[in-house]
Each structure stands twice: as structure tokens, then as C-alpha cells.
Length: 139
Image (cartoon, rainbow, N blue to C red; front, side, top):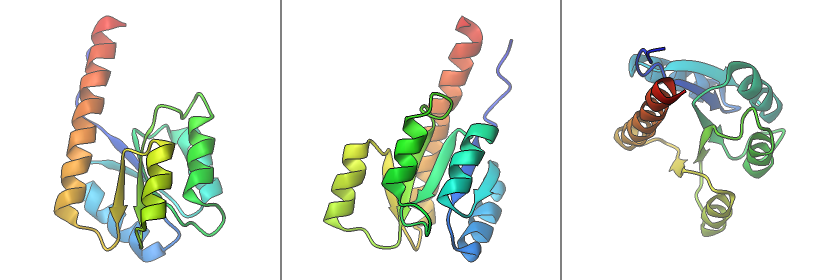
């Protein structure tokens, strides 16, 4: 079976509707498929159902914090391999240490530096595309 290209799917988890709407528009414009979640519970559910390649996870959702959601994702074999990027409105040394210990790929601060976000997503997407391509040829 031939892999048909970089149809990377991103789940955006944020409890601010304006952020969700803007990220949906921006990521679609950049060529990604986009799923939205407004809570930690919804993030965990959609991760299992929709199997995104990447999750942009607001660390401070109202119902759960990022560490709890990340633990739920990594503790489930169906979602353990999803790349997670934390998003935060205020980056502290403590938060950087916690997310580093958790194994997050990156922490991105709001407001977004869209050039940096695009570069990070392109790099992760390229790695995912190569992995998917190899799995099609090996498996």
C-alpha cells in the first residue's frame, strides 16, 4: 500500500473559542486537517476516536491540567504515540521543567509566533510523513 502524502491531522485543545477558531482557520490554511476540543475530557475522547498525528494542548484547560491530559494520552496504547505540543499563556521555569520531565516535544507560548509554530509543525509533520511512508513499505 502506497502512502499518499502528508495529510497530517492536528487536534487543537483550548478552552478559548477565539483561539480554537483562529487555529482552525490558520492550520487549515497551512494544509492540515483540524479537529477541535474545548476541554481535557473532550481532548482525551477525540484523541482515541480521531487518532490525530499531533495535539496542540493548552496546558491550563479549565477541567484538567496539561500533565493530567498528557498522562491520559501516554497511558493509553491507542494514543501513546501522538506528538504533543504544549501551549501556554505564561511560561515559567517550573512549567518548562514539568513539561520537559513529561516528555513534551515543545512548549509554545501565546500569543503565537506563527512563523515558529509553522516551522515546528512542518518539522514534526515531515518526521510523521517519513514514518508513515516507511510503515507502508515495510509493513
